[in-house]
Image 1 (cartoon, rainbow, N blue to C red):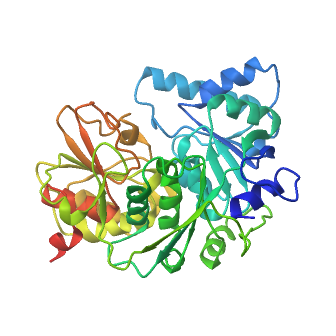
Image 2: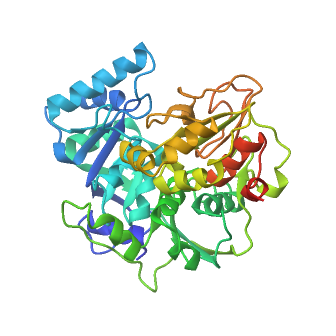
Length: 418
């Protein structure tokens, strides 16, 4: 079996599962946020169930409009907060909250071998830890909160193998953009993406989280990495319960195997209006920008801010550019503060936000006006994603986003540092 199949078999009481099989799956964690939780709560109440199946396995994270940006978002958060208090579920209030997909691994809530479902498509992020994690609709999440189970079809798996050593400034964001550019936004629809190769082994956990996070942009049900020493180094001090690591069998059956040599890969940029509209940064250098966003659940890890600081420190954000830095969690924010990164960002003329999804979904903290362009380390650049339908979003890693903020146009880090 593949990694995904092994985890799903273990959680469905079966010795073996196969692609296409319909199964009931026991879940280890159920996630919802301040946008999706109110829908799940209303559906939960319609079920006529008084209590959630296990309050310690349900996490409500108000991260999209943190702190609340207006009265409607405050009402959403209030409903989520009151349900969490009444049910005794895990809940992270402003001041302790972070973007959920950074916060949950950081807090040791997601561990290898888990099945995690969330009312948020980027729940797939946790596959970086060797978990089967996937997004579902709010009604499915209501049932999961009530029963501790979900119903799903076992996905087939595509194996991706990345050969070679990445060039400087090329990270997980570039590898996944290159992949999506190759297979398309529907290239892995309802499949698991399994990531392998020497380039993957060399990636820090932050880069793996980034790749797993954007598996859904290829249509994937999940994106998974094998558990190695780097994974264990990350999860062991955080784990408050036992966990089981799974490994794909040598004779596992894959839908197909895709291989890349990324030795000469440039930093990648996804042009509007699809994450698959990808070009190397050398083909994007004359595009003027109005805003640069560095952060989000995709690239809001400490290592991402460290990369951005290498470029912004001692330099100035272009006078015609708004540069917004968003740490993925309070802990990331604190570490960035201790390392002097926040000071570097502010001295460069950037603004540092509280952890929030904010501009990624066109919510707040950086909404675009008609005709404006942003380069962002976020995960989606659909029409109107970050604001007005006549605005444009270009996706890139933190190195390119920071360099672009300095030069006022899409730029490679070498152009700034030379």
